[in-house]
Amino acid sequence: MLKNLASSIFLTERQTDPDVDASVPKVKGRIITTLQKAKEVRPLVEKCITIARKSLQAERNAEQFATTADRGSERWRQWRTSEQWLQWNNAIAPSVAARRRVLQMIGDKQAMRVLFEEVAPRFEDRPGGYTRILRLAKPRLGDAGTRAILEFVGQHDRVRQVSEKPAFENTEEQEETAADTAPTESSTEVEDQTVAVAEPENDGENPQTQADSDEPQGDEPKADEKA
Image (cartoon, rainbow, N blue to C red; front, side, top):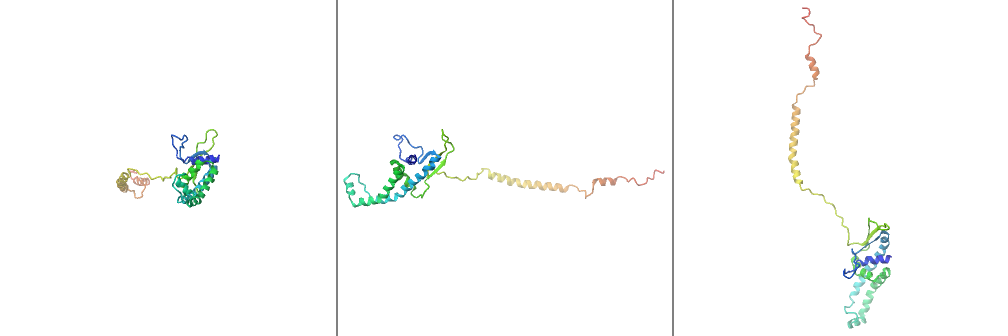
């Protein structure tokens, strides 16, 4: 089961023809499975990519001893029996051993070729962490199993964007209106203070006491009573 899952994610990177191939992948480098299966198959996929990535240098070293002649031709037979073929054989040996090891791990020749030709060169400068697991919110129909996405990094990366401060169109107009309104409000405050100062003051006397002083006192004798 794990071999099939690992082969499936590699086969999504293959070159397909919609007219010939009936099972064209919807998204390259991505498969959808359960969360538990994705966690189990991820180490296998990562190990296969590491093995293929380390064998790329051996393939480049063997290119200088390779021939461009067609297989089975007279020129190819001469190269096959020459010293150059021995040098090519020694240089390409680590890559052949890596391909055989990956084939033993996943059990699919086509997936192995796609891994060494398409996937491994992409992660040549990456020391690890070739895949990611994204948990899906919608469960699987039938058993309500938790689904997840297993995909290669570098193709469908989510870029975080920092929100920008909104710019208002009428900002300058609002500033000009506020500048024109400020002197008007200050002059109104000055007028209110002037009116408050102009009001008459009682010099600290009680109005009731002043009214009582104007009334005649009852203790004074009246001169007209005896007359």
